[in-house]
Structures are given as C-alpha cells and as structure tokens.
Amino acid sequence: MGSAYTIGARIPSVLMSRPISTYPTRVKRTLAPVATIIVAMISIQSGAALAKQLFPLVGAAGASALRLVFAAAILLLVWKPLGANRMHSISPAVRRAVVFYGVSLGTMNLLFYFALERIPLGLAVAFEFCGPLTIALIRSRRALDVLWVVCAVSGLALLLPLGDTARLDPVGVAFALGAGACWAFYIVFGQAAGAAMHGGTAVALGMSIAAVIVVPVGVVAAGRSLLSWEAARTALAIAILSSALPYSLEMYALKRMPAQVFGVLMSIEPAIGALSGLVFLSEKLSSLQCVGIGFIMVASTGSTLVGRITEPAPELLP
Image 1 (cartoon, helix red, strand yellow):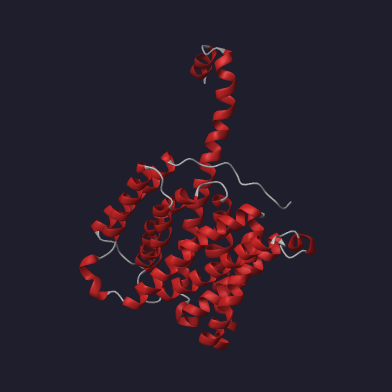
Image 2 (cartoon, one colour):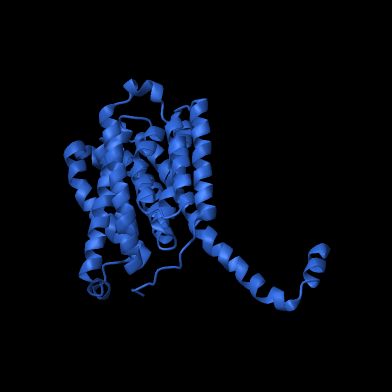
C-alpha cells in the first residue's frame, strides 16, 4: 500500500488527471464485451451437453422445440417487447431484420441439434464454427486479422479427427455446416437488429419467431412426449443455459464490437464444446486436439488484443 502511494506522488498532477481517470473506463469498455461472450459460450455448451441427454426422451427436434418455447417465454416475461408503443416505433426495415434474425436463430438451433444427435459435441461445434469464421474472413481489413483466422483454422484442423473421417456421420456433418451458415446470418441480422432497438427486445422477438418456426417440427417428431414433466423440467434448464442467458449476453456484445472481431473471438467455441463433451458426456480428446484448442485460444486472444472495440450503438428505443 505504501509503495503505491509513493509512486503516485512522484507523477505530476497534470499527467495523472486524464490518463488515470479514463484508462479504467477504456479497459472496462474493451473487456466487458469479451467477458460477456466467454460466459455466453460456456453457458451455451453446458446446455448443449445437457440437451444431448434429453434426446432419448423427445429426440433432437423435440428438444429444440422445448428449448425455444421456454426461452421465448422467459425473454418475453423479462423484456416485454410486445407493447403497442414499442411495436409501432419499429420501422419496417428493422422488423425485417428481426424476422430474419429469428429465422436464422431457429434454423440454427434445429440443425445443430440434428448434428448433435449424430456426431460428438466438440466436432459439431467445430463444423458449425465455419459460419462465424466466414464472417471474419469476409470482413477482414488488416493483415493481423487474417493471421488470427489462419491460426484458428489450424487449431480447428487439429481438433478434427482427420484420420477417422469414415467414422463420422456425413449427414451429421452436413447438419452442422448448415447450422454454421445460419450462425453467420445470425451474426449479421443480430447486429442489425441490436443496433436499432434495445438488445433484450431484439432477442425476445427473435426467440419468439424461432419458436414459432421450430415448434411444429418438434410436435410432428416427438408428439405427446413433449408434455412429460421430466422433458419439460430438463428443457427449462436447457432454455436458460443455451438460449435465454447466452443470446442476451451475445446481443449485448454484438452492439459493442465489430462483427469480424466477434466472429474470430468465437473461435474459442470449439474448445469449450470439446471440453463440455469431455466433462459432461465423456467424449475424450486426443493430444492433437488439445494442441488444436491451444491454437484456437491463441487466435481468440490475438483478435481480442488487436481488435478495436467500437463505440456502443445508439439505442433507438427507451
């Protein structure tokens, strides 16, 4: 304690005033969206591991439907986006962005669960990651951005069991890649919706649209089993972990960082997915896959340190 005050006393007050008062604010502005994304990814992958254990009861489509219904209900109760004043204030262009956001969200969840039914969690997340990685490549403007993407791709290659590709279900891989394409659209339309209205309102509306799209598929696939108490109880926990909490956190972060930084930062997702598979589903990793996780961590850290966090988007709604 004493040494800190002594060092501070040696700095002229003219030099201390502005840097010391603004530096913590800048750090907080930079780190808050990054920390929010990491918490969201841990939550979403824990929920995915739990969802895989629900498949024997209601199947992938049924689990996706229950998850989205509960998540939409929670978000509607929390954010109350359907008030007359709020809806009339939304322009047609913003409404279209919200609709596309919800469609992307629902399709992404459904396809990912179909993939999860057929291939391990870590691999499903790795294939799905092609979506945000594509966004990062398309919107890259600096050589260092490309370096982090290359690093992430290298790690992704090490995560995949390339010597055992014959054992992978090709339909599951196709579903995961389709979910990745929807993930890319989710980033684009989520950023557009979040920039034009309160983030919680956009997530609640998007999740409701996603539920409307997926529920009919779940009802056809699972039928009466959707009404079981055990399935509903588990699905509620999944909805909180995999939808309500993480998507709200991601919407917060999307409004405070460029899309390419968000995309490359999400490169940590396969690592978290693989670790969740190991902890919750006993899906073990090879040594090469562990090295791959390290590469992905480096890519995520590099993009965080080099990427510049943007100013918050203006709130058009109170």
